Image (tube, rainbow, N blue to C red; front, side, top):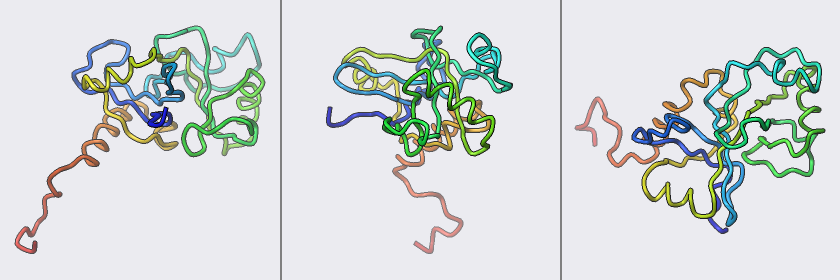
Length: 186
């Protein structure tokens, strides 16, 4: 697929009322002829990382697990910036990778406790589209697309992410110039 949207944000347009995607920003981590997969980056759940991982490893982390989407809600996914722990994986966006195995998942979480520079987010579930389904939704006008960024994926306030991205899309598609205090100077 020559025009893959991998690494792009899908930003739900205001008229998209599907409860799974209303005012969401989805980072596409896969997009090819077989379909698409993404993670909703702006919906924290009430479950902490420590609680979600309690049966698997001992972690002291009170950050929240994010609701990644309606598909496979019991599955956990991780986005991280520890490329040295996952050298065979291709970055989705600049320095953001999807954990490629259970071992990498565990290493990222445990290493992040020791090193402050490692960032990660854990998602329960994902968003998925069959072949051509996402393209149909985009052409129908349900989604904006915008380049993915580490700054947005790991934003301190997930509740402003959708509005921030909608404003960025509007700014990048602006037809008229910004208003000026002195139009006569033009």
